[in-house]
Picture: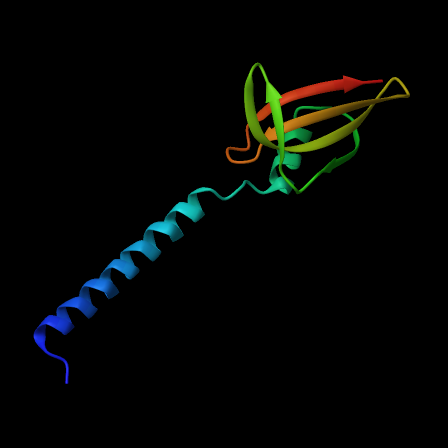
Length: 105
C-alpha cells in the first residue's frame, strides 16, 4: 500500500510532467511557420498583371545584411508590355514579412 510520502512523490512527478508538457506545447506552437499560400497571396497584391507564382513550402536559410533568416523562397511572373518579368522573393517563415524581392529578366 502507498503511504503519504509516496503519494506526495507521485503527485509531484505528475504535476511536473503536466506543466512541462504544457510549456513545450506552447513553445512549439509559438515556433510554427506562417502559411506559405497566404504569403503568396499577399505578395501577389504588390504586383500588377501577375501571370504565375510559386512558393517553396520548405523553409531555407537566407542571409541579408549579416543577419540570417529562416525564409520561404518563391517567385512571381508578371507581364509588362508583352514582356515577361520574373521576380524572386524571400519571406520570413515565422512572421510572414517580405524580406527581399529580386527582379530577373
